[in-house]
Image (cartoon, rainbow, N blue to C red; front, top):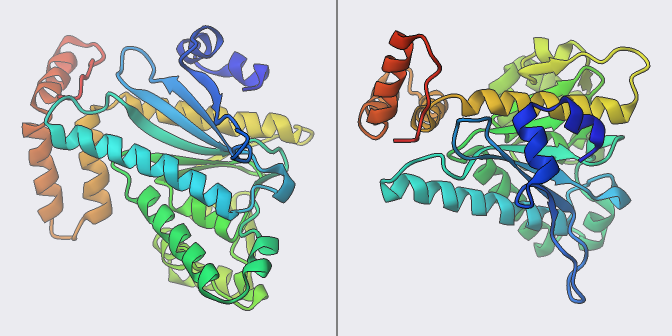
Length: 320
């Protein structure tokens, strides 16, 4: 991770990256039989005294501008499925929740792009046959798993996210964008439509009219519109003259800060709140069910929250 970002991160995270052998940048090691990994993995401790960690998956495929190739999608699927299995196991085992990954961040190692979308060169080699259909099914499944993770996920977008790149971002729970970022779904310019959730996930965020405009025209959105339209929950204003590398670092810094805020909540309550918002039926049934989860599964954290409020201090949650 670049030194400038280390200097601006919260002290606890900075110290961990600088001194701990168990955190920081961890890349899959290439072997004689496997190509170099296209993902870099960083584990940051949640801000003290909260349990768990913040995991950053950084796309690093410079030869094709982080395009969603078969290899990159396979690596993303492996990491996302691992997080799903680990967090689901926590919930099912009946023990403390939130001891592993609390928040997932998806970012880019490239200054010029977040994710350029589909790897069109690879797609042309596939042709229109079962290989393409198999790849798309795998991509859809991966993004669906990301969207339904039991923990929040954040896309840190500093630059271009087009097609599948925007679909990857839309599958995350939240999005942090630079005001210089450019997002779009240009698939109709290629004779197809978004095929990995872009149509309905975009509609859920910006409404049918704006989603229609972006899909039918291939129009790109940037600047203030990212926040005004609701595509990004957090827009990082970059002054003129800020280098693309600095911009990427600032967006990641903001995403890590947002993840730290999430970690300040009770793990059981954060999970319950996500499900209540995502699955809410408009009648309060799901909300009522998840409230009971907080009272039963998160009983001790609920009591700690009330006690801390009365004592005028920050609550220290343990996921129970």
